[in-house]
Length: 344
Image (cartoon, rainbow, N blue to C red; front, side):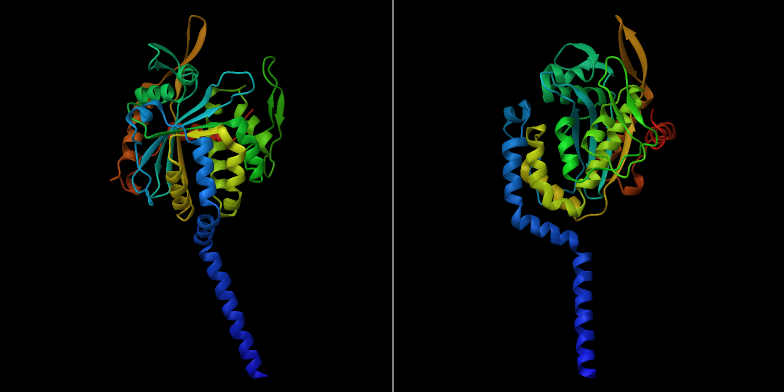
C-alpha cells in the first residue's frame, strides 16, 4: 500500500512539474508550434497580400533593413490608419510616427493630428497633413512626415480601420475605457451610439469609437492611440497565435507595409517571447487657425520640438531604459483625461 501511495505521489509531482513547465514556457511552446505549423503559411500570405514596397524601395532595389532573427536596434515606422469606405478616396485619419525598441519591448507613438497645417512634400504647397496620403499615397505621406519631424522613417504600415473591424471580432473583442455613452448625432455624420462600461467591445463599436468626431481632434487622436494599444495587446496574447492565419485573411489588402514578411515574423516571435510591451504616447498639439475659410491646426513649436527630441532619444540605441524621455506633464495630463475620463 505504501509503495502504491509513493508511486502515486511521484506521478503527481511529475505531472505538476510538467504542467508548471508548460505554463512557464508556454510562450516558447506557442512560438515553436507557430514555426512548425503556421510560419510558412503566414509568410506567404503577407508576401501575397500585404507586402508593398515604396517607390524609393523599388528604385534602390534594396530594403532599408534586412530581416534578422533578433532585432536589437530601435527602428521607426509610420503608422497610417485609413477610414476608406466604398466609392470614397482613401484618407489617412491617423498618422503616427512610431519608434520600436524590441530589445526592451517598448514602443513610442508620436501622433500628428490629421488637420495639422504643414508642407506636403512633392505637392509644392501647405495643406492638412492627412491630404498627403490622398495626393500621393504612402510615399508622399512618409516624405511629408519626415519633413515635419525632421527624422527619417525606416518603414510604413497602413491599416484600414474598416478591415480591422472583423479582426477585432475574430480576437474576441477588446477593452476600451468608455465611461459615458458616445453618441454620434451630427446632421452630416453617420449616426451611432457606443454604450459605456462594457467588459469588451466588438468590432463595430471599436470602429465607431475610432470614428467619433464630435469633440476635439486631439481627443480623436487619443482614441486612436488607445484603440491601437488595446488591439496590439490582445493580438500579442499567446492565446491568439492560432488565430494569426485567420486574422491575415480578414485583413487582406487592408494591411500593407514595406516590412519584409520574414522580418515581421521574426519580430513578432521576439516580442511574443519577451516581456510585456509598454506603449508611450505623445500628441503634437496645435492651435486652430482659419485660412480662406478652411480650418487647420497649426502645430505648437514647443510640442513639435519635444516630439523631435523624443524620437532622437528613443532611436538612439545607446539610450538605456532609464534614460528614455517621457511626455511632459501637460501632454500626459491631457492624455490621461481624454483616455480615462468620460468622452462625450
